[in-house]
Image (cartoon, rainbow, N blue to C red; front, side, top):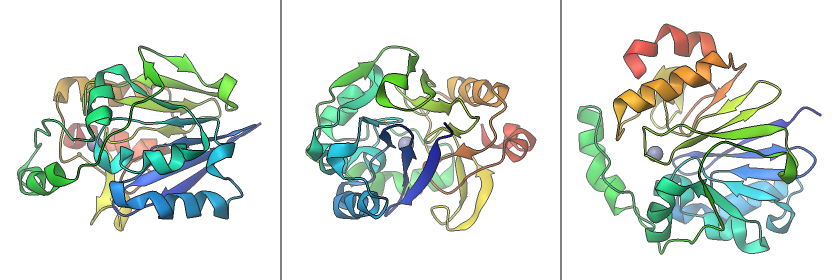
Length: 226
Ligand SMILES: [Zn+2]
């Protein structure tokens, strides 16, 4: 059955609610987003206790900060093993900027912390998500952070976290325009990860900020954004 992807726009990032046989949440917003996130789930008839899994694309606090609210119903939280420490610390790590905007934003992003959360599942490689009720695979895509992962759905859509971003002003202006992210720990690995996603010929590419993006636009701007 096709998975319905619901974008949940939060204060500075997107979370994604995947409605399949059972609901799965991908990413969990910034520390202050808990109430908004849970309210958005409920709008779609989902309570935290219904979630079969909360999968985090990476350990930055604008994607993990409200995970405790989402996990309050007992859903297990999965994150790449290499980012588990960020999640446990509720911190953002090194944040190497990719340009002047990143350099300017970094002090603010560094201050966005929370008490941290211990994940139930640390990912050490690709994993199918069928047991959690969706036809999809979660795959390593390190580069933005060492433990970044992407979710590739069997019906062709991709959720790629912060490998790239969409649009200006946190994605509010021209959200479908692909841009390089402000921070990347390993540009070469990140570029390879974007390339691997494109090789799957995704129909839509959902990102942590702005989007969704069309694969044709990402291909056209590949050198400018990776
Ligand atoms: Zn990030």
